[in-house]
Image 1 (cartoon, rainbow, N blue to C red):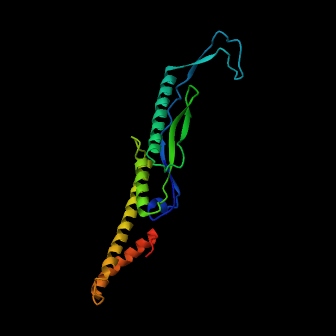
Image 2 (image 1 turned 60 degrees about the horizontal axis):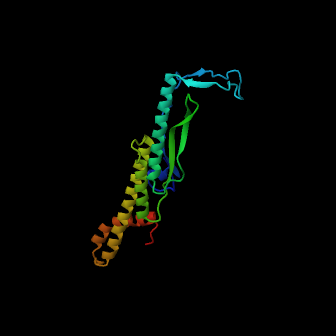
Image 3 (image 1 turned 90 degrees about the vertical axis):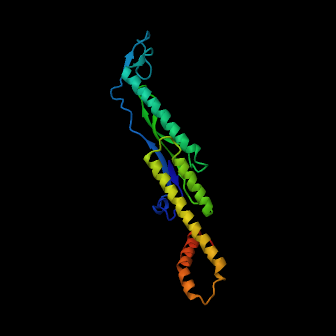
Length: 213
């Protein structure tokens, strides 16, 4: 699964990346010993454009049939994996699934890997960003067998949500302080000094979230 979006203070954004991918990549199926056995039909004297006899068919050896079955199972697994990402993306997927293919001994191409791109840009508000982060994490972990890159994106989405939640808490703390500051005697300089670090941290959070003071 791939991610795209704008930068922020958490690791997804600090790298300058605008997108990440939920990726399901597997090793190729070994088909080196899976050779077809050619059998000639009744019209073996005539040929087609490919140079094969018109009545000629290709029968697969037992090894080739086993390789085809393995590729078919892999194809189903990969497609189900990527569809799980898409189904849980909540509209954040920026494209459909893309696949990597391997040609089998039967001449058919089978999916052996895939990825889905998903938008990780921040929302218009802290709450929107948290909701988007939760959706990204759910999409990353939606398949029954999340890949390593999937789990890494889920961890980054959790970090994105936690970072934004922390800023929001700081802002709420600042607003609570502003609402009660008038009750503090201006002569209580010691109390004001103790609150100064909180005010500085809250001011930082307001700047990060672009909230007017």
